[in-house]
Length: 142
Image 1 (cartoon, one colour):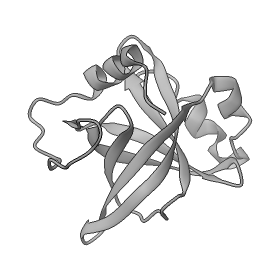
Image 2 (cartoon, rainbow, N blue to C red):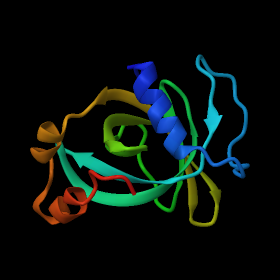
Image 3 (cartoon, rainbow, N blue to C red):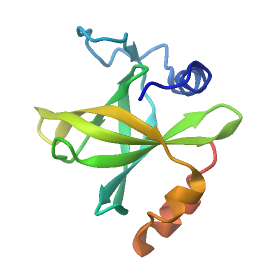
Image 4 (cartoon, rainbow, N blue to C red):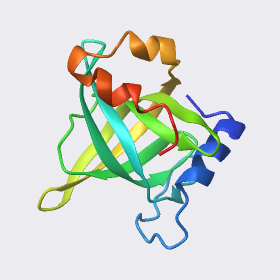
């Protein structure tokens, strides 16, 4: 999946941090932009959200997102990311883990490939009972 340009632009504008030096250039099909912002990540198991975490963005492109986090995820694991937008509800995106590698003790670099936008009604059907409070508050700008 490739983000529509309007959606991508609104997410990038919300994530941009001019003082950020996180991220390293890499050869890709699409250009990466360094961004540093906290976002919510919801781990999917059997089609439902089982755990929710806050992670730090590292970079973003039209096709994926790089983050820094304190836990390991398996390659091909699917998640839902809550990406901020200025003046609009967060954008829910289903994504797949493409790589996960340790950077330092307790810090993992994880690369995600965007798969599809997720509607709020669709998301509600994926919420496990113990995650319901986390996501109910998650659809506003943070």
